[in-house]
Length: 252
Figure (cartoon, rainbow, N blue to C red):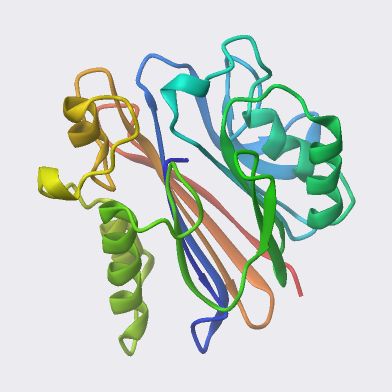
C-alpha cells in the first residue's frame, strides 16, 4: 500500500471503512485477492515474488495492511520482505499489540514500514522508523509513505474527500473508488522532500499513480458495519480493463 485512508467509528452505519491503493512496479508478478490455499481463512492479494501481501482480512475478523516508509538512504537491500509482516499477523491468533511487541523484540532488518494490524473493534499502527505503536482512535486517518496522518498533500486530499463522501446521506463503493482514482498533483512547493528528487516526488504525489513502469496496481475497500457484516472489494489494474474480486463475511 502507498495510500491508505481509514474512517474508524466515524460513520453512523459503519464502524470501519478502509480505502487503499497499492503502488508497485508493473512487472512485479501479483495475484489478485483470493483465499489462500495454505491458509483458507485468509483473503488477500499476493506478491508472487516473496509470497507476502500488502492488505488482507480473515474470516475471523483480523485485518492487516502495510505501507513502505520512503527513505532511500535507509533501505535494507538484503532484509526480509515486508509483505510477510501482513501475512504473519493474518495467519496468527494473538492480538495486534502482542504481534507488534513481538516484531520489536525480533528487531529484524526490515526496510522502513508502517503496519496496521488488529480486529474490527481494535486497530494499531506501528512504524519501525519511530518504534512507536499508535492505537487508532475514532475519526478519519490517512497513511502514505511516512507516519500516520503526516500531512502530505495526497493524505490531506484523501482524508477530505473521504469525509465528503461519508458526510452525504448515502454513498456507494463506487464513490469510494472515485476517491482512490484521484490523479491530481499538488504544486511543487507543497511536495515532501523524501530524498528521491523532485521528478520522482511529482510522480508519486497523486493518490492514484500512473507512469510507464510504476503505478497503482489495485484499489481495495473494506467496509464493516455495526452488525459485523464485512465487505472487501479489490479492483485491479494489471490488464487492459480493470477487474474486481471480493468477499462478504460475517464478523458479528
